[in-house]
Length: 256
Length: 44
Image (cartoon, rainbow over all chains, first blue to last red; front, top):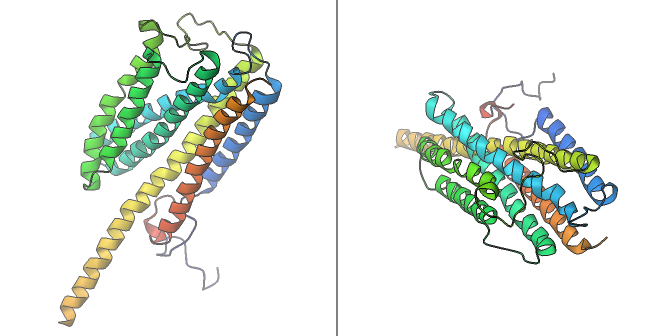
């Protein structure tokens, strides 16, 4: 190692940001699987007997909704750990926050793509149907959760406050998922995870749908890792800034 | 293909917003990483 190159762990600054070899691998995999999903959704799969070509929207809509559920459950689990564990509380809290941010994006995508699909299939962008209404309510709850996280407080207080909210908010997910069974709904029942265990999809359609879930999950993992590291940098920057200010103040006091 | 406009719109909104969030995250991380010493970053 040349003298100009600092040793690993030395106090240096770099511009690599939050990337590591593992995140690069996840990113490349996500891009590769996503490319396959788009190609298969547009060119390989056949139109649905009932829905026609609008079924091609489902390969984005269904994975987006499933990954949004996954994100909110991850937020709840990380929040639970942040409450019960004495160490690494802030680490779990950052994972919870990052997962909720990404989950809100996926839930928003599920709402938008579902609305476009609804226009083609039902003839309307929106209906105050149980599934749509509970999904919108879930989306708004997590937007509120993110707003609570932004209230000015110490990272410890932020962690405790938002963890309690996340553990309450996750209880809405079963309500959303089973809304099509509990109430009379315009929204179709689950084609894959239905109570009969009967998969109502053709082989390639099912494979494309599952590939979509894999691609969106990889994108979710990539985004959560980067965004929780980003939150670490934001918190650290506050600490570094405070340390510098205290050091400057101490120097000033000595000079007087 | 029937209803191609709606289908394309759905996919472009989905992939576009994911790409935008990814790019915004990387840009902000790069800018903040320059202000925090390496030895304080747990992932390095």
